[in-house]
Each structure stands twice: as C-alpha cells, then as structure tokens.
Image (cartoon, rainbow, N blue to C red; front, side, top):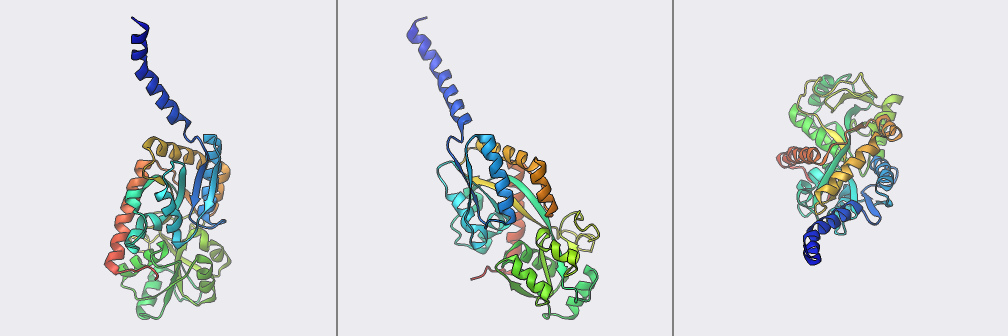
Length: 323
C-alpha cells in the first residue's frame, strides 16, 4: 500500500477523532449562567450552587449573571436568544409554561427557542389564611367564602404567577368569588397577609413558612401530591376534597434550543451531581424544596404538560397579565 493511500484511508478516522476531541473540550471558554431573579432569591441560591459545580466539572469558570425583570421573562429570553454556545440559565414556571399565554408578543417562544435540560427542584405551595379568618380547615374556608361572595381578597406575586393560577384553579373548582390583589413580590404580599389587609394567599413553602411557625398565618392545605415534611399536619388539596388541583413551584435548567443534545445531557448530569451534594441538598430541603434533578426527556415532557394545563386555564378563565 502506498503512503498516499494509507493517508487517504486514515483521513476519515482522524476527522472523527478531531470531532470527538472538539466535543469533549466543550466548554472551551467561560460559561454564562443567567438567573432571571435577584441575588438572594431561591432561584439564585440554586443557580449559584449549580454554577459552582459546573466550574469544577467542566474546568471553565461558570459565572452567574442576575438579569431580573418581567417575572423572569427578561433573563429567560436572554438564554433563548444566545448564539455563542456558552450560555445556560435557570428559570421558573412562568417564563417556561405560561408566559406565552399571558404575553402574546413575548420576545421568545419557550417551546421553540429553549431546551429544558433538567427539572431541578420543586416545592408544594401552601394555602394560608390570616388567623382572624374563621376557618380551621379547607372545607370551612370554602363555606366562609361562599357565604361572603366578593368580600374576601387573596394575594399573589403577580397576575399569572403560580400562586395566582393555583388559587384561580381552586376557585373555579369550588365556585368561589374572591378579589385578586397582585403584588410585585412575595415580601409585601406576606406582610399584608400578616397585617390582615388580605385574607388568604397561595405561596411556595419557603416564602410563608416563617409566618406559619410564628402563628402569624394559618395553613389550610398544601398543593403537592403529598404532605410536606415542614408541616406534616397540613393536608393536601386532594385530601381536603379537591383531587386534581395539585401544583408546584419549580426551577428548571435551560439552554438555547440550538445547543447540541449531548451538551444538554452533560449539563443535566452535572446539575444532578451538584444537587446531590449534602450541603446544597440540605439548604434546599430546609426551605421546602424537593430535589428532582430529572433528565432532558423527562423535563421536556413535564414542561409540555404544565404548559398545556395552565395555558388552558388562562384561556378558559380569561386571565390577563398586568399592563
């Protein structure tokens, strides 16, 4: 065999080896990790733990950027529109599953422009009332609201937020009439609940747990499929007579839809290892979160189901986002 022929036969193998090396080398420069909420928020805490693990796992700095605004849509949109192959992010329910239904002119299409690498953590929400509300359980609360149509108010962290939609779903199932009071964030909403300016709210466990422990608010039900470790005496909505009303607040790891599938899978695997670290897992579980760490296929199916469910509710009830 001539030298020239040996070189020709070896060329494809060398090309494949080169491609494999290039794939294995990714990321070959720092990663940007976009968190669409401010420092100190639960998504920020989760995101920073994962970013620190990415730095160790990939051998490249993974730098967190907090790009808050529009309920997470701004930062999530930056991930969707990234083109350099080195941008990832973390987001929550709204920007992935309901934003398109609430904002028809949204700058990105979650289903088209984003790859969901992993469902990271989820938290059951808590239906809490001010202590002066004369109801000790959900059945009593439903009866009280029915006896006072349009007189009670419930808070949320914004129109179309997870808590708003969960309460709207319960109201539709139970035939309740309450006034919605949207807030810009949970601190003011919780403050008004404690002060008695609103009667009830549905919030992620971590946001309301301190007030429940101090007796400044009373929990009537949790929205998860099972009771929560932090308040095992509180029944689920299903146990309280409303099966099918289950809902969660959740965080997901995302990347641009253009990112190759093998890289998305690597992100999911590294995120699962980060969440398995005892220090990280302990902090999240203490705050009421359940570590999920699913793979890309399972996460994508979950988000698709959430989108169908809540977008349908938004359309059916005519729910609008704030102007």
